[in-house]
Image (cartoon, rainbow, N blue to C red; front, side, top):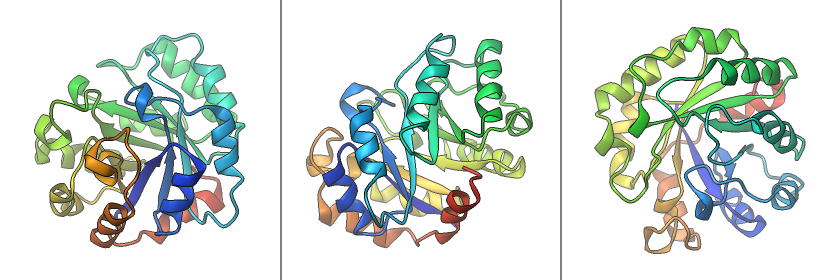
Length: 238
């Protein structure tokens, strides 16, 4: 079963999409890059909203895989009250340094989702190693939002292989990257745990514009609600 992840940049947007029943509320600043980090004051404000009834994730910014501030960024974002911290893999491989940092963070009980990118898609990912190290999940996304979406950059066969191999290793799986309503049916057939959206939910389909309630409703209606995702929150798996 596949859920609906919506990316938001403010408490007002969070209230807007929660009222429409999204499965994962993802916090990011779309004006600051593919995984632009939202200011932590905003993250804390959203995390403290009553009756969210949704899984909460947040990004830490577009950091290179050898960034020394990676560990502190993850720890401080987790301390804001989110269920999941998303970390981008901005390379074709995960550096030994990054793996060691991720192992330490997972050892502290921080739920991590690694985001891989279609433009940097690696020839092989050791999903079992990631799961053994405590990683909760993996996503495929796009770095460049203006020159084609995920399905323009990777065919459905490659996406299905990613989802199947990661899922069989026990990892949560997500697909995102300028997805539109036309992408939903083919991607539901692949059966990731969730599909992620930002631009398709906004006015003029611009990811930095305001959310459009009608567009959020439309996407919600096309994706069956995945109540299973909330078990990760209650069991602290994510």
